[in-house]
Length: 411
Image 1 (cartoon, rainbow, N blue to C red):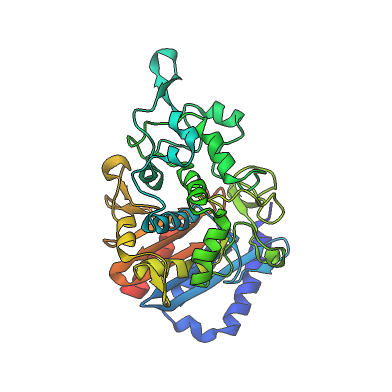
Image 2 (cartoon, rainbow, N blue to C red):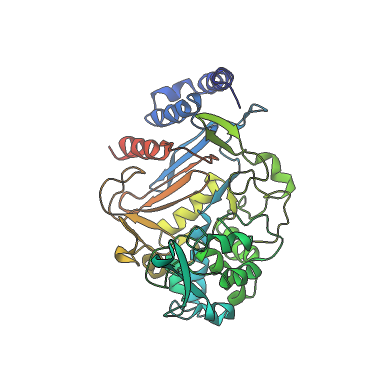
């Protein structure tokens, strides 16, 4: 645990250096965004944060505030590596749509074609008469690729009526990087565990996109990391995006902190889902399409720009524009309460958006380590904010960043 005095002293030292290096920046409109991010560090709400905004194809804001690691007083750089967790889902969804375009996948074909174990997966139906227990009933329809893409497969992260069964199977929560088996084997084990809901009946956030990653391996004949590298990352110039970090880049990985009792604490190794994770020294064999990637702001912004541009960037076409349109169109209706969802993205359409303003047509997603991004076609703008904060204890840095972006860039 770190005292507020120690943390603020480190921050002030960094802020003085940043201001001395760019005194003119204080008069730029983007200076307001940068200083607000600095304030979150100074107030002990986050150890470090990188923000970036691209409008009309140009970077109009980029900033790194705080520290890569507090203990060593390493200052954060825009080029540092962040665990992006569920931001991985968009990449996996794009990969699946690439295979749909090639005829290797069809949206409405059964998952069991690729992973036969899912043909007989059962559903945990809550039995009110038993005082909170559940009974297993057959699926009333087969899970499809579309169900996976929209989180309507009924596959949860294990936190439901059958949580004990998931826990006993050693599969609980989004973190899979430490598993010493490939994603296809993990998917087969998930198939033997109960669904939380009947396929197509509810929006259930869970392992759907991880299972989709296993399908991509089977349909393409390539491990997921190689498919991503050859078909997406190399073509987009995403040179710093990996499931597992090369040792040569390990010193750029940002430390995970959490807000515990209103103080920043370095998360210990070994505490599942709230730890540093095994992204450098782990088994390096389980490629989690749902939450496994590590990336940088510059890399992920290139992925965002590809989508904003209708599936292409710098002469490299990843998807057809019609596929991007389908991905970014509501696919679930009222199943996702207060929101709508496409393939890999969410849309806030009712009431106030807790993550800040959302113009019509904008879509977004985020990650467990308190990162967030959005794509705004109406204003030809993309934004991203990366932190490594879990638990985040209601930290509202996402909303404040987004509000300032629209105040500064749109007016």
